Length: 102
Length: 176
Figure 1 (tube, helix red, strand yellow):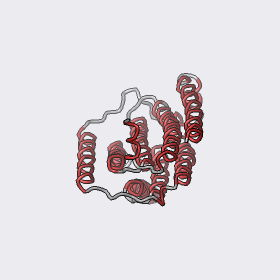
Figure 2: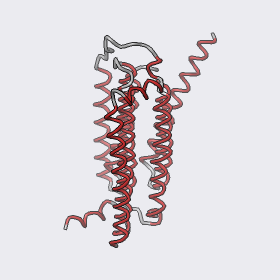
Figure 3: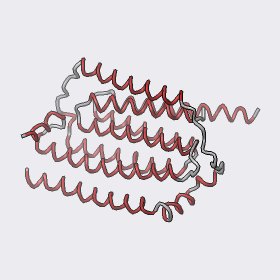
Figure 4: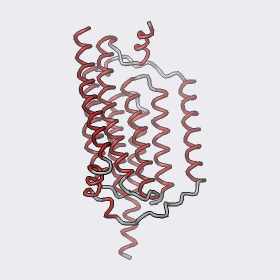
């Protein structure tokens, strides 16, 4: 149970689910949720490699912390863009944003 | 006998956490109702925090719950309530698109799993098996000495993101 391959398979499964979501959703908030899943799968990989292979056990945890901070920043910016779009278009589907094409 | 039953308990806890994570991720992707998606995301993130505990990092598990479940999910719920997409009409999913995306992610999954299974993972030779190196004290010391740049950069990024979010949300209100 507690070996590297198990964690790698779990994180590959999470990443594929996130990829599926980001490709087939048209709701912007749904796409943001899928992006969070992708980031978490990558984070899990970092932690597993850090636990089982890496000589310095601190590095992977610091990378995981950094990714969490970036995800928080990305969620804040993304949600405010979604709110601005909703006020303009009264929809949060991705087709509404094509007005930017000009 | 006592240690073996403890082992079985640990195993079942681990697989229960894995099942919780995968179920949460499925709920986050498949239902059409956006509120279910957020709740599934919260479930999956809590499960991933449990996996971090299984990996031995208490600090990162707590940060996961604090930042992801406590902050990001709540922010998404607020965005849903402010934009009220629940009352809008949801367009149907086109069948060829769903099939293509399923094929794409299945191909990706098989590629990743076969790569993970075929590689011979050997630990680094100068790895130390000392669980005290995973303590919070050690992480804090590293974060303020050797990896100080990471700490400063993440603070700056968060500050810029907060200002940017306030500006974007505020300006759009003034313009529209």
